[in-house]
Image (tube, rainbow, N blue to C red):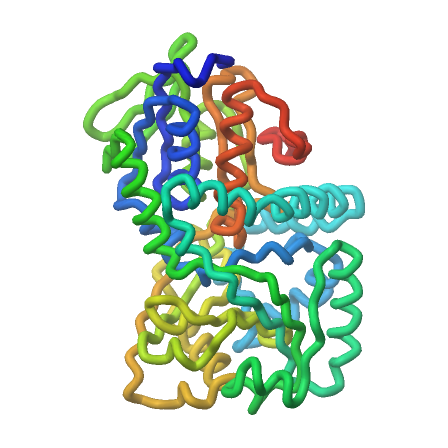
Length: 420
C-alpha cells in the first residue's frame, strides 16, 4: 500500500491497545489513515500497565546468552531467584526452551544484539517525536538510572560492564561512598557501588502514558472498539477483523496484541514461538520518595523506582502461560529483595498492591516488526519482551514505513516473522 499519505482515506485496524498498539494507531493517524483500535480491555491495561516505567535503552544483550544459560539451573532451583518455571507447565515450555538455548549460538546472538542496538539507539528520539506531536512531553522524565552491587568484591565486575557499555557508546559513571550517598541516601546503606547512567529516562507513570496516548487518538477521530478479536483474515486486497459481535473490513490491519498475537497469526498459517512470560510487580504508594532514580540490582536481578503512583518493584521471569493464577511466592520474593535494599520498607503499615501480567517473549529477544509474507496489507508489531515500553514509539514508526513501502535506516530483516 503506497499512497500519497496526505490525501489518504485508507482505513487501518490496529489490534491491541497496549503501548505498542497505541503508538501504532497514533502514527497511522499522523500519516493520514482512518484508524480503528481494538482490544477486549480498556487501553493500557495489559503488560503496558505493569512495567517499571523505565526506558531501558542500555539493555543490548539478548536474554539468551552463554552467561545466562550457565546460571539458569541455579537460578531455577533457588527459591529467591528471579527465574521460575512452574512444574505443571514445564512439558509445554520445553520446545520454546530448546529454541531459547539455540538463540545463544554465535550467529543468532550477533543478530539479536544488532537488532536491539538498532531499536534502542532510536527509541528515545522516537518517543520525543511522538509526545511532542500530542503535547505530552512531560510524560518522559530524565531521571538517570543506577545499576547497583552490594558486594564490595564485585567492583571489577562493574568496571568490566562499564567498559563493555563504553564500547557501545553508552557512558556511565562508577559511583561509591559519598558520591553514591548523595545520589541515593537510603540505598547507600546497603549498596557498595553502582554504575550511574546519567542520561537514562523513565516515564512518569506507564498507565498514565497510555491514557494520554489513547486520549490523543480519540481526539483525532480514532475509533475504539472494546471487543475481543477472534480472527484477522485477508479479504482480497483488504482485511476483515472478526470480533465476538460482528466483523469489520479495512484496507490494512496491524497485529499488536502482545502474547495473544500468536493465535491470530496461527489462524493465518504462521506459527511463531511466542511465549507468555509472566511478570510480577508491587506498587507501594507511600514509598515513592525513598528513591530518586530507577534502580537495577545486578545481583538480585530486579528493578525498582519512583513513579507517580509510588515505588514500583518489578521482577521475575516466569514462563507459565496464560491460564495459571499468580503465585503468591513471587510477590513474597519481590518483598524480600526490595526490603533487603531499602530497610525503610520493613514497615507493616505500608500499603502494597500486587499485579501480574503477560509479557510477549520470543526466544531471540527481538520483536516481530514485519508484514504478512503473502498478504502485505497485514502487518505485525509484537514480541518486545521486557522492552515494549522502550521500543513502542520506534516500532510504530517502522511499522508505518512498512505499510507505506518506505525505506528505513534500520535493518528490517532482523525482525522478520518467518526468521524462526
